[in-house]
Image: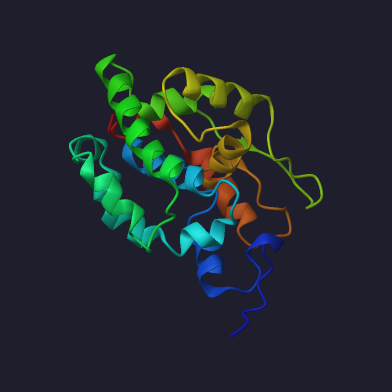
Length: 204
């Protein structure tokens, strides 16, 4: 049933989309593995709508070991063919391979002593960026997402273009792109002001 709460227009009236908008989107994330999972899922979205991936998220978590990079890299090569037959995920060979590639890149960063959360949050100096969007002024990329995309590609990640990176930053609370009349706006702003990456336990 409609609850008459004002929301960002993109989530429409789909109950799953509204829950994601209310509880997840824009809430700052510090955990490295959670950030890795979200970046991989955003990459799967390329060319599709986010609701398509959101509805398949549980299937992705089952297929990719809850996005544990260590477990992903240990999967046999033959498993990729199994994934091509898995109707619960997007059966695109490049997208399937990208998650394996991203897991290897994640672990390579860790071997260099770089925690993934530190690597990603450095682009906003460890602090969420708070905007006062009205609805028609929300970008699909910016200078920060450009820099993040370039650095991720250099580190060996794929499906991490600037548009994907900006959508990722919106989702994990690196920017607040809830519009000002959205019922989540003030609460997300408070969470962002209270957020401190250095105060959280690192899971690099």
